[in-house]
Image (tube, rainbow, N blue to C red; front, side, top):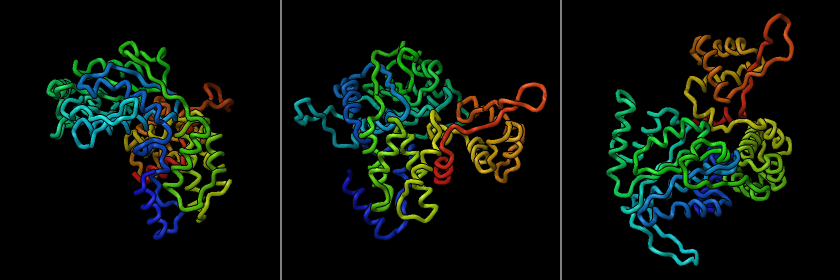
Length: 390
């Protein structure tokens, strides 16, 4: 652990008696600088990117693994470091397999490295804009310019780089459109796609030279991840190894779900004014996180209007009514400021994205199709807390 983090945490404890001294490490959508126990994954990716250290472009690749395996944490951390190295903003050393430090390739000879979150770059325009914005120093317009114009500027920016560009595209949940985006990148661009689908099920692997995998966390490793996050976020003696083992056993290798449960448990204890988490808090945490749900980054990445609809769904308990009743309840909620027809449309869009689901009732009191109710597919308490912090 970073010594500065230890000192800062103790400073917080000396001035703040609250259970939660820093909520950020509890967030399952926040990635720490160096993810725990993912050294082999970093090594495999560095092996793949080894041509970059000689001033060449690596081949296209697809990184896959189950939900909560740490794919985003590893890739975002690695690309942040590689981007710094490529611009000369970091002291660069590479290591031989014998462990002897060697001077690395000069920054000017390395390709540029760009990380794009597909959840926030959902259109061809947004995707090209995100890559271009990372490559140029000047402001890139978001209005009054066409996708074709942005792509032309991107092609010029990539061509101007002496050794090209490597783009990581995270959260490739829809394979075909992503494949179209990636294959439309300029010639001197290479990419790493990151997703959950097995290579045989991912259309974009027709354009890759290599498949890489990150497996789910082993239980004991996940205990360490949960304990580390708790130590960074909570007061002294607030959390026990027994609690960490309970969360790790329940989450079945999914670090996102484990951290979401931890965040909800800490929120429950904090709301009750306790200085330590109890077994009941841990149970409240695991009960709040739906099995097979979506990661919290999904609802937190949608438009403000959709987030207001989701928040109103939770606040009004409208998830227990039909779609029509839910839309009526949301529309009547202060601060939503949307028409009933707009709310209905947004609910259907959220359902199509898998963020909420329409559950068909088993019986009906009248003829015709039985009504459906709306249920969210994410941890509601964690969503509320994270949205309030945004």
